[in-house]
Length: 246
Image (cartoon, rainbow, N blue to C red; front, side, top):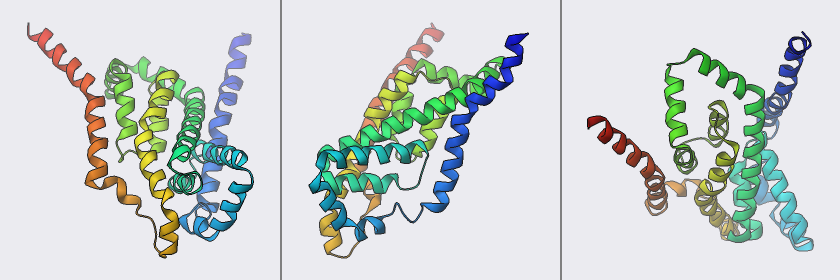
């Protein structure tokens, strides 16, 4: 009797973190869309460089902390944050700061979604059984790391989708964290390297080319990593078909 009475309250409390994230994300999309921008970075570059030079360690910690907030609340400006990391800290440790911040932020939103809504949806999906989502979940869990790596490596998949979808499909937190950290490295290094050259871009009065990741010399190696990540899926599928035909 007591357990039953506590169930609605417990469910509501689990939803609070996800509700806060959704609320802040909505407000951030409206109020911060012009703040976390390339123009803001360009207009405040001298102040940012002076601040970095006065306290490098603090600047690195603050940058990583802001990146965590941007990803956790799905705020606009993640690409600009990565550029800023390269502009202030160089390719290294700029890329490392970005990867760490993005990974921690992704883990936080994944955890909030999983505990607040993911577990409930996952249980309902299992209870219904036999649907497309169940088959998708089965395929995911058979090759969990490969699928998660592909979600991170493919540039066309929005980052927040890759954060939320695994939470609703019962993915293990450890695998999510590892594939996020290593899977976002290639893209982060590319954008950080662009950021490292922003001084020349500013001097020329131009804007950075954020579509650089789709250029053949950049996209080719990333697609190669995608093929490598997909290889275990292909091999396992081939083995299954071979065993079935025997």
